[in-house]
Length: 78
Image (tube, rainbow, N blue to C red):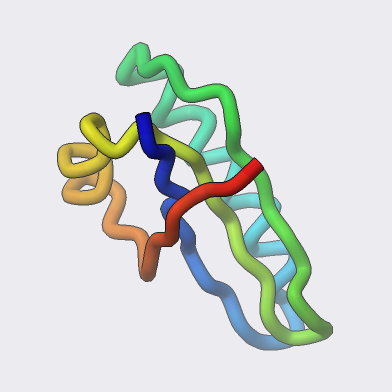
C-alpha cells in the first residue's frame, strides 16, 4: 500500500512556530476522527519556510484531504 504525505506550507519569520502548532491540530483531528494515522510532524526547510505534515494510506487520502485541505502532497518514502 502506497503512503502519501499531506503537507501544509508556512512561510515567514513565524513559520516554524506556526508549523509546530498546526501539527497539534492535525493530531487533534486524528484523535477526534479516530483515525489510524501514526506519522505526523513538522520540518523547518529554511529560516522562513516550514511544513507540517501527516502520512496516510493512499486509499484513505481523499476524505482527509477534502476535510483538511493540505497545500500539497507527495509519495511518502521512509
